[in-house]
Image (cartoon, rainbow, N blue to C red; front, side, top):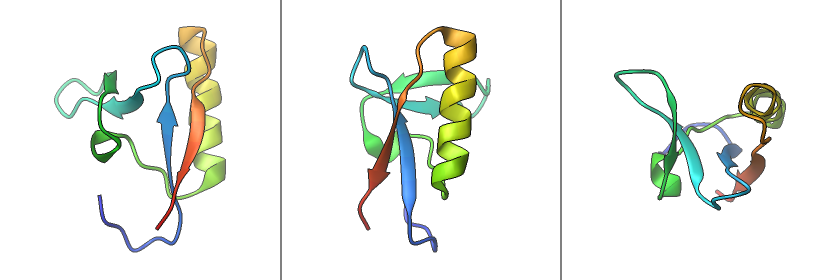
Length: 69
């Protein structure tokens, strides 16, 4: 998950305590055990926007977690 960006954010399911990722073949949002497999955002705004959209569709808004560099 190395990137050239200074900040990295991921989404974590509140109810399950696991991270959210995107399936490479189906493009569906899935629960992942490891932060290494999580969907990475490079801006807080982008992560919050996607968390809100997921909350609207799935009924639970995930937490936005800042990963330390």
